[in-house]
Structures are given as structure tokens and as C-alpha cells.
Length: 559
Image 1 (cartoon, rainbow, N blue to C red):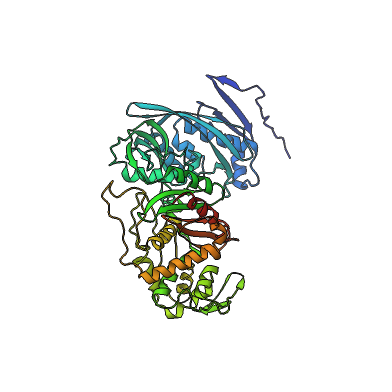
Image 2 (cartoon, helix red, strand yellow):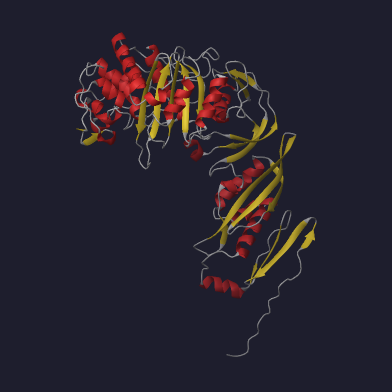
């Protein structure tokens, strides 16, 4: 084989040297020497022998990452980021373009400097690290500290380890496409007050964060406040599509808040918060029917305001609107006989009742109280495609995209449908979409006989115009509809939840099937004297058992 010289591989067995408070680390193996620093260290020095380079060309490395690969890649990225060497840092990731953009903006747009990055204990391919820096803007500075992490992955094409790039590596509050920006907040802060003049905070009411964001967005520039300086997360297209609001990360200087008074009742809001805390994925809204004032609104989930902005099939609570339509058209009346078969086929779909029950020789009141689906579907052949849409718009003020409650909201959607989809809409399925605010308003309209657009901030504050309905139900229709809801509250599917709720009451339960969910969304809407409420518990099951107790508890608190 001839003579060969083996090159002895020297390994540094000495302890790492401490240089200026940082640690110089030498990792040598596989013919590659990598020199990097924790903290303020120097750039990596990558030297590869011709023999090693030739070997890499022959075979792409596969398999799990070694501890050395993970640690070395992480150090290269973090050291380069800390030194402001964006190109080198980005090259250590698997998305050079996105990394370059965000790391450049970290300094240029977020005005973050003096960055010190310190790694924690590696867990597998994941490396946690802490960030200490300073945010400076126009003479105002404030320290910034937070924790983040990165994950190292092997590239399938070249076999090399890279930092798996996501915006959350730079800051955990960033989704991909989001950016960090420091500057004047643009919109001055607001101090939101309840109807009694008390300040509304997330400390008092955990689920009002989205409401406060909405109030600031709408009234910040007109409420008399002055903008402060903030480091903020500015949402990208993907986050905006999910309706995620911008977020304040660090307040460098406080603005002067303006004051916005709301209609929230502190006692009822606290009660609503306590109720939704008992049920995961629950939301509830409480209104004053005579005025439309929103007295309470709460969500168990904090990130999205389902109570105001949710878009969910309302299930059988929609039958309140459908019943008003059938009564007006002379197709139903509480005491008249009404079919409730086990099945009814329309438009090629076979509809059935819960547990396939039927009511033989029953009345429409019995069908409404037991929430018989086929009692409503059976009337589809006698209706026009747009009848339900017109009823929702003209009588209940829904589905016209014109509510102005003071913060972002969705005012229901009842699109014109045909055939089986139209029939499904009659029982709150198909393309019909509502939220607790909408369904509380439906009960409020039944209670007063007139649609009053709900609002959280009085229109007197900004002279905005509230939405109106073009007509009201006849006295006869209204009387019959109230009779149906009162009977359901006393003897129907809502009776158990409404037990102990006294006064002039009415209610309707609902369960909305959702593709992919084992349990339906549970709905409940009801009124008591001058209160109206609605709630939903997503994936909760039957509305009378899940959302019903939440709504009833609030109705019991006042009239």
C-alpha cells in the first residue's frame, strides 16, 4: 500500500480561556476547527482540509445531529447576531432571506442595540438563550430582556446543520411575517372606564384585552391622549388574516391616555369573567334590551374575542329567527298541529332530529320547545331562497355588516342559500354564522319587539350612526314568538338551566355540529326582564347543559 503519513489530530484538553468576561471555546473534530465566543466573542473561523472537503462531496451526511453540530451551529448564529454580522448569522439559518430581513430590522427599525446573548442548557436539538439589550429612540432608552430559543436541523440537500428559521427565534411573540418596530405608538393610549367610572383593566377582568386594544385603535386619536414611545410587534399578513392585533413589547415612555367610557357594568362583568373561567372555550354577552347597551362580555380564551367577533354556526338558537318567519307567513302557530317526523329529506339531504326522536300529533310549541329540526326543515319547500336572509336583516338587524359597537365586531351572516343549504340554514347550520353578541341581540329584539343595535361605547361619544332594522314584527307574531320562548324556558330544553330565573323570561337552546369535532358547540340565548344574554361553549355538547348555566347565572343577577 506504500508509505502513508498520518496527521495527528491535536485536541485542546485545556479549560476554556476567560477573555473579558466571555468564554472562548474551541471545538475540533472531523477536520474542522470552529472558534466562537459566548457573549461578545469573535467571528467563527472555519477551516476545512481538502481531504474533508472531498469526503463531503462524495457523501451527504444524514442521521441525527450530534451535540457538537447543534452547539456549534447555535454559537455561530448567536455570536454573529450579537456582533451585528447579519449576513453571517443569516447564513447559519435555513432561510437566509427571511433571517436577513428580520435581523436587519432588529437594529434598524426596532432600534435595539448592545445585544448580549447567553445560551442555556441544550435539550436535544433545541438551544435556549436569553437576550439582554437596550432599546433607544430619539434620546429615550430602556433595557430589554427576554428569553427565546432556537432549534438546529439537518439540511437534506447538503447534510449540514442550520438554525431552523422562524421569526420567534428573534422574539417569542413574533409569528412568521411579523416585525418589531420602535417609535411613537401612533395611537395614544386610552383609559377605559366602566359605566360607574371605574377603570377597566385586564387585572380586574382578564378577558378584556382585545376590547381595550379595540378601544385604543378607534378612540386613541380622539380621546385627548398623547402617544408614547413603544417597541411593538407589527403583525404581518398571516397574523392579520387571523385577526391578531399588534402588540406592545416594551414601553419606553408612557403616553398620556385619553378617557373612554363604556357601558360595561363592573359587577356583571366580574360575574361574566367568573362564569367563563369554569368552562373552556366559552364566551358570553349580556345586553340591556331597552337600549342595546352591552353590560358584560367575556371569553375563556384570551387571544380572540369570540364574544364579539366569532363566526360560528348558531345551531338551534337560529330557530328563534326562523320561527318568527314561519309565524309571519302563516306556516306555524304555537297551538296549531305541526309535523315533527324522525326524518325529512329536502334538496337531496336527509335531515333528522337529535336521537331521531319524533313528536306524533304535536304542536309547533312542542316542536320549538324540544328543538325539533324536522319541524322547521319540513317548511323549506314553502319558502323562497332569500326569505330567511330578509327576516334576519329586516327584523333583527343582522347580516348587513353595519354595526358600530365601538370596537371590532361581526354582526352575523345569513347568506341567501338554495336547496339543502337553505334548509340547513333554518336550523342554524349550513352557511349561517353568529356569535354571542348577535344571539343576545336576537333575544333582546324578541323582548322589546324592536331591534336596538348593541353598543359598548355610547354613540354620543363620537356621533356615529347605529344600525337599524327596516321593520318590526307584528304584535301577533311577537306575542306568539314570546310564548314559544317562555314555554321553552319553563318546560322545554332550556328549563333546567332557567330554573330559578324569575320574571318575564324566554329562552332557546342550540347545538351546532362542526366537522371534525366530536362534540357540537353548545349555544344558549335568553332574556329576563330588561336583560338579554347569549353564550357558546365550543365543543361543549348540548347548549342547555353547557352555555345555559353561564347565561342563566348572569340573568339571575338583575333585571
